Length: 112
Length: 115
Image 1 (cartoon, chains in turn brown, purple):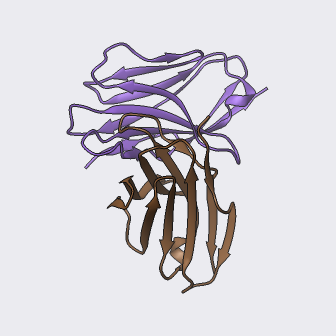
Image 2: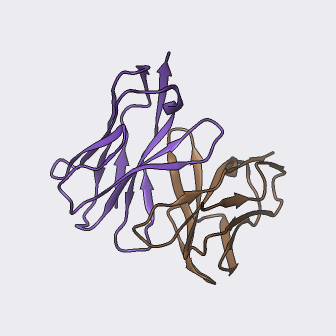
């Protein structure tokens, strides 16, 4: 079974802090994605990566950056956390562009 | 721009009954996939069913089936013989054909199953 893990289930940070959210997948998937999930808005794509060191902006990239130094690991970085970045963050991976995405358990981030 | 709309924020069903969740979408692409994902409370999101746009036949997975109306841009999910374990948030999603499988999600529908 594909396994996607995220470094924390719950995280509390202060405004202005630099925040790292880590995601690891164990099935050699090419594509990895970061979403944020907010009530009434569904999931919105922040960034995605289709290969090591390759990345593209999603629909809401402002205030975020990403890093993919190894195929199995995709990191989301909040350079200076703000209260409007309080949300549930979901990581996902897929083998090919038509394939199902496998999701991690999510990180609920609270920025105070 | 692609959009996915789920107009039912909440639905409920009695155990063993049938329920249909609605989804409409808009895309200018001719090549795309549609998905229903399930997010149980405090558990990971999983795929329920997938439909290729070029296939006219509706996809079916056990108790789950879709009604895909391409001209109407409608993609509803029917759950037959509902079980308590079906209680979850359900998301409809559209895959953007041109680029690496990026998904556009709907707002989600919370399904409650009553015993």
